[in-house]
Length: 269
Image 1 (spheres, rainbow, N blue to C red):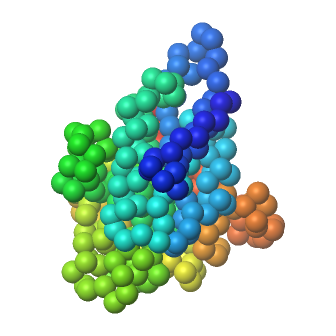
Image 2 (cartoon, rainbow, N blue to C red):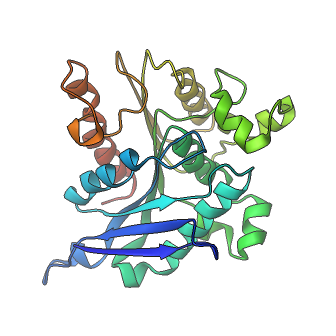
Image 3 (tube, one colour):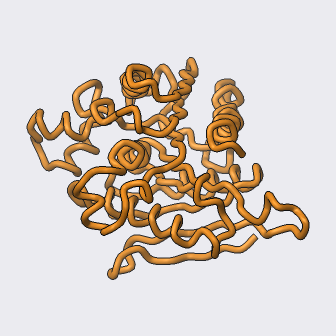
């Protein structure tokens, strides 16, 4: 495996860490691997290490290249989205260098990082983003998305702290609605896999429910798993991410394999 790090802003406060599996001679699959771009959570005020490399390693084990993104935090919209879009664009443009398939790149995000990944999945053709990056909209479209206990709605059971950072204190309902991803889904949104726990008391599972409903209404392929119990921020659901053995962990940990099966299906891996 090769690990590379590169900056995505002049201040070098936002950067990407690339985990690239070695190629194996004679195996065409290894010449152009599928990949996943990972946006950790942290309420838009930090990027959680627990939701970066540990998740990347799970996808590496399944034959994917993985990229973890440390994006702009404590910054109003659209700073983080522009970081995410620029990162995705640069990774796609450097596909040959990274030995990845430019048509098999998924995004993954946890909690507020799920909102960011969801923004990219639903706003890849937004005029502001496209004009800022000076590229073609299709170059920013993920081929699929995995959203883990995501922040979705600023209106339905919102995670108040995330939206206050994005929009300022006491944001108006119009701005909240604009950044509520259930309102941004269209038939051109890529396939989405989501999971949540029913008793998440930080980011309520209603967020995933309204997103799934929007996908269904727009005929976007969607798979949603609501596990019966587990706290917010489970990440890989094991000791590597700070969780002691508990009866719900084995159940929730299944999200990793389920998401890989989903990506394999919809990205034709």
